[in-house]
Image (cartoon, rainbow, N blue to C red; front, top):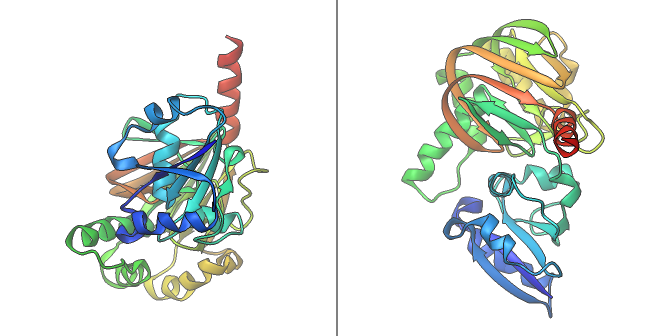
Length: 295
């Protein structure tokens, strides 16, 4: 039996390859084979692995997102583990773990994942879809990474964005046919788990295994200073106390429309110039799969 470790060298601000080798202290005595995900076709690799072998995905949330989308059209019969070596690591935090912990079995977490459609293309997602100041932060972070290998300070980007650069949008949100209108929207992510953005506990009641619906958390209606005061409380999930400016909307089909284009991030991966995204929940995906299997 072998452990096939699929790693992303770009994870963890470019430390992914080095950090991945830390897995050897957890798999002492095991046969390990390493594969650079940026140089290989994930689906083709997995198709060639014997069923008795194990797969380990090593990287951050973006690496996991790439893995689940690269393998979206195939049934994986292998045991799949995750070894966190990213910079944000929201998925492993949601599971109660930390970076560099022993690889954790994730088959149940990557099954029947929700989907988001943006600009006519559909993606699976693991943590959440960020829209607003969080998408803006990913956009700026991507630009900074192109210029330097230094770690990106997303908290600093968010604070500067709130104060000087990002302008809140107006939003129309449809949740299972019920329509909502919000003014001055700073955030409107739809979440499958609790954490995104490097530790922001935006939807503390969301349980990725027990909840069949997804939650759109809307931070809205406040000025810059009030938003800046409340923003740090998101990391502890205490922002939900501010019911006058935070609305959690749960549903199976969610569509969010902004009145002006902004960046959207899917598990930390950025798409620019988006005015609308639509969500199909885990329950919707499971139902569609069951119907397809019967047909």
